[in-house]
Image (tube, rainbow, N blue to C red; front, side, top):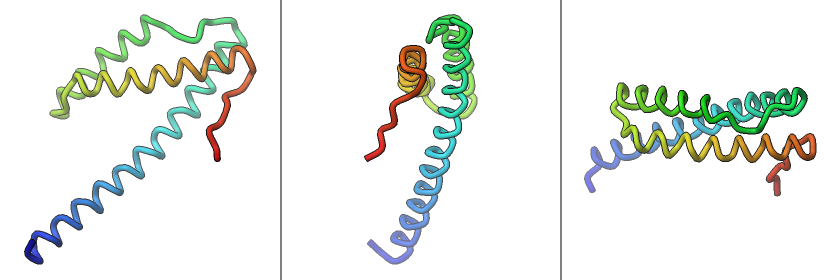
Length: 104
C-alpha cells in the first residue's frame, strides 16, 4: 500500500472511530431517557412495551433511513435491537425498581 492510500485509510478509520464514540454517547443518553420512561411507566402502571409507539417509530426510522441513503431494513433491525433492550429495562424497573448494570 502506498503512502497516500495508507494516509487515507488512517484518516477514514479515525473518522469511523469518532463516529463510534459519538454513537456510544448517544446510546447512553437515549438509555438514560428510556430508563426514566420505564420508571414513569412503572409508577403509573403502564406496560413495559407500547406496540403502537413502536410501529410509528419503525415507520419513522425507515423513512429517515431512506432519506439518509441507509438501508431501511438495517435501520429497522437496529431499532428492534434497541427496543428489545429498552423493554427488558422497563420490565426490570417494573419488577425491581432498577436496571441491573453490566459493569465488570
